[in-house]
Length: 111
Image 1 (cartoon, rainbow, N blue to C red):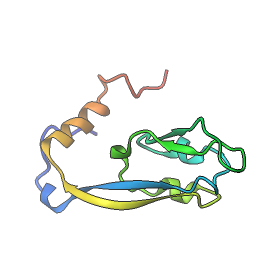
Image 2: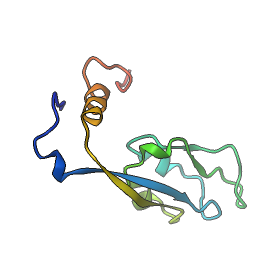
Image 3: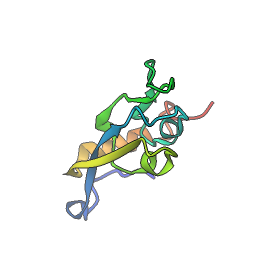
Image 4: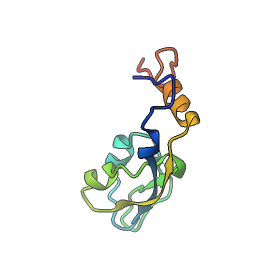
């Protein structure tokens, strides 16, 4: 679905922004949080924790929308998000989403 204009009820909605917190000592390196993050905010770090696993690290904290999938999927309760702010939807946000999921944009297509 793509929008060509700002929705009429955009004042009633906002875009959440979350802060990702990782408890590295609890992580067992399963990678579920990395795999299921819808915005690709996480990646496996090169560093080891005390248990010898590679915990995730934050790539881009600005992409976190505090969806909570990483918190729900983590079997060790090693990651959680906190809502930092919620900003009003702007026309630039609509254009970003429209471009990202456009049929013309091949960046997110599976080969």
